[in-house]
Amino acid sequence: MKRFLTSVVLAAGLLSATTAAFADPLKLGVSAGPYGEILEFTSKLAAKEGIESKVIEFTDWNMLNAALQDGSIDANNFQHQPFLDNQVKQRNYDIVSVAKSVVVPMGIYAKKVQKLDELKSGATVSIPNDPTNAARALFLLAKAGLIGLKPDAGISTTIADIASNPKNVKFVELDAAQLPRSLDDVDASVITLNYAVLAGLEPTKALVLEDDQSKWHLVWAVRKDRAEDPAIKRFIALYRSPEVRQFIQTRFNGTIIPTW
Image (tube, rainbow, N blue to C red):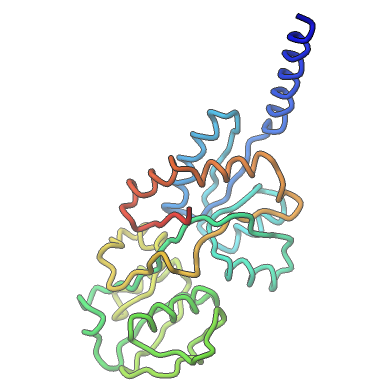
């Protein structure tokens, strides 16, 4: 009986410690759009384990890492590794990635043509103006055969690295959020999925869409001093669960691709 009572006390102590570790609600930053839906679904799973969380949507990508750095949020899930690397380098953030998230395919959209090969000589194509997504857009255009890139082109590729441009395409660089609206003025645009969905565009109707081999998968990011936080680690483990994978596949019909 004494041993049994000791076990009960120890178990109660462990439960109390776990509850204390998860006492403060996690503040999770995400860009507006489908990413937030996935986090909200995960939050319901986490709540069953006593992990309270609040999903905070941002419309400005640049604010997400700033908020993480200053402690306004505990983790974010919106960016791919090249974008994070660039922000850390430029702004000296103390932020690291701790897990892969999903591939959110960038696509080439158009209102004036039904196929990419219908673009006429001198056509205009809008792409994101931030360095990492601009490179990503150029790689997608190269994969589609519209342009050719230099052999040594990498994640810092720019328009200057275009080696061949048979249709003499003219590029317009815009803020990512402005790209869907540019479709009335350009012949095609390379748009990330979250902004495409917010604008009512149908990803399955994109002229070209990235696949699961994209190097630009999203990551979970935290400050270095929170990398081993048990609540954050458990929330991410739940995010990368079969239940969330099934939700993503059902809700987004293959337009968002889990990495697990």
